Every structure is written in C-alpha cells, then in structure tokens.
Image (tube, rainbow, N blue to C red; front, top):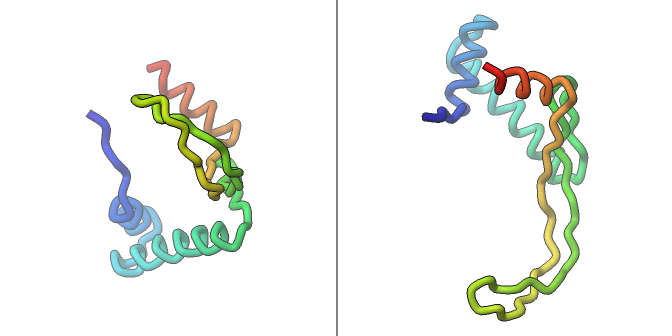
Length: 99
C-alpha cells in the first residue's frame, strides 16, 4: 500500500528535525509552498538543487480525437506544469527500486 506525503507530514518533519513549534513549522511549510506557487504563476522556473525543476510549458491548440467515438475535438491552448527530477533524485529513486 502506498502512502501519500501531506503538508501535515512535512510540518511534522520540520517540527521534529528543526525544533520549531508545530504552528511555526506549519507556517514555514505553507510559506515555502506559497512562494513556489507564486513563482510558477509569474512564469518563473523553480529549481531546487538536488531535487528537481518545476517549469510551465505552453501547449498550443490542437485537434484531439475522442477514443470512443473517433470524433475530432478541439483542444484549447493551455499551460501545464512539468517536473524534471535532478540526476541525484533519479539515482536515489533508482537505488530505492533495487531493494
């Protein structure tokens, strides 16, 4: 069974490892996440060393196809968030899959 890491889990880790109060830890995590979101909304790339890079990509309009009916459907232009893990992160994940 897989576990999901939540904001509360991150706050608890900050509380344990840094020693801030639970409230201060939650505020710190929230502040970091807000800063990342605001940067992405502003069109900036967010690069976290040894972790990875979050970036926005603009996808142009195109014609898609409904797989059930075969009907062609226009797909509107949109921005999508992408994540590219660092080489260190890829290696850590690969090493974790070996065991």
